[in-house]
Image (cartoon, rainbow, N blue to C red):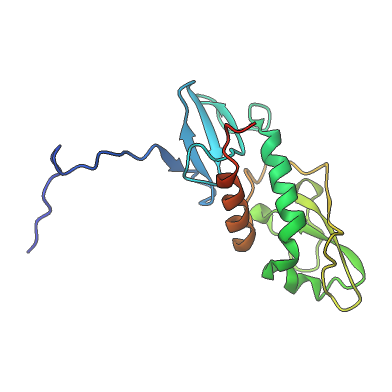
Length: 176
């Protein structure tokens, strides 16, 4: 049979991975920083706009987690601009005609025909009589919590995840 060779210094790549995945949400990357804190992000790139951070020895709790306001602005702007193209919510629009439909965090998906908890709602978008989301009508929810005490960090639909990750990477965390 085949035997795996043990890696030698010559066979190891010159780069090293400096992140890990958050155990409770595979969309989240955890980066250790030089200041001994942990930075949470939707990107494997350490210079992408982070969701927020906590000290390295602290557990992830709403009281100790520092939310990045730049991330919240980026998240809400991306949702406002791109949610009408998200298939997950296009399908929900069909059963929410003539209402303002909640755009919610997938960390705690509500049961069918139930309203999600207010802290898990990113915002609301108007749905017309035909069940179609009306572009430009999204309103963010100021009561949304980036880190909830029960559900953890945000979990996005597949489409929103790709869009938010791209925006976080495009807007370098160090840019002013």
